Length: 81
Image 1 (cartoon, rainbow, N blue to C red):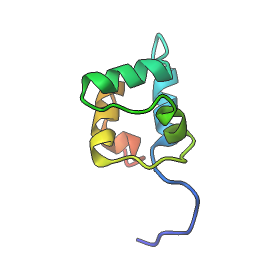
Image 2: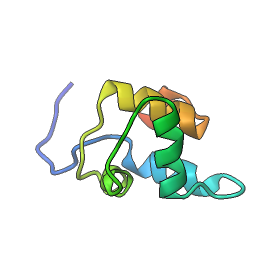
Image 3: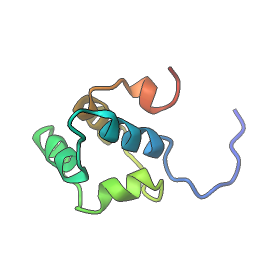
Image 4: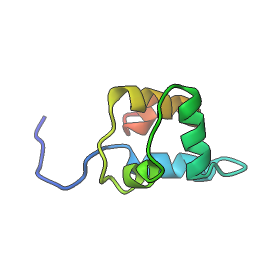
């Protein structure tokens, strides 16, 4: 696999935002932070915004928790399904 130089620090930002907003009712960034906290992932208040704008990397543990909190698969978040 060839990686090109770009400023994106994660692959999931667009999908996280899409998944949050497609839910009925919509999941706010604060709601997502709370859902992650219940799953043992404590993030700073600005973390979701930074993830969605792809300016913050995401750890493997965060990836698993975000997928679970949003009710989507890890592969979907990664754009593989």
